[in-house]
Length: 115
Length: 111
Image (cartoon, rainbow over all chains, first blue to last red; front, top):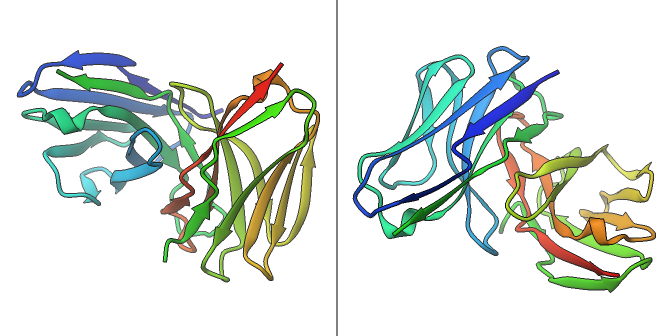
């Protein structure tokens, strides 16, 4: 069966510090990978998605970046965090290919507080 | 117009009540519909997955799709305090690599 791991679960970082959140998927190959941010009462905001190694699409201009160094690894980074970067970050995966009946699965999330 | 709109709630019901959670969508070509449950400070988990119109039942949960009115619902029978969570509706795009989410409805079931 497929599993998704995301870490760290919680972190508190000062303004201006770097960020690295990591996500790995097991039990599948060539998945689509996603990073979402969820603000309280505002739903899920898609930040980045990737259909393959080195292929990253950005949905929202910001000081965050994403990388996919391996097939089942997805990393969210920032060189200098802003207060507005605080939030709940979710990694997710779905099967590759183009078919309308796809499903998306989420990791446990990472709570980021920028102070 | 957003692809998916969801009643935001919050919703508070007594234990044992029937709960109705609702979303509307804009694109009549959508065929697959999902409901996720998200507990506080956790990632969303897939609860129900339905195709086209009609009802799908899983224990105390029933997902209903009305394609004529572009309306999807999740019913919870005999609600329990453990059902207290945020529920999100979701629809995959027709290419399957994008997903449209409702903003979520927060449900509290009071013992």
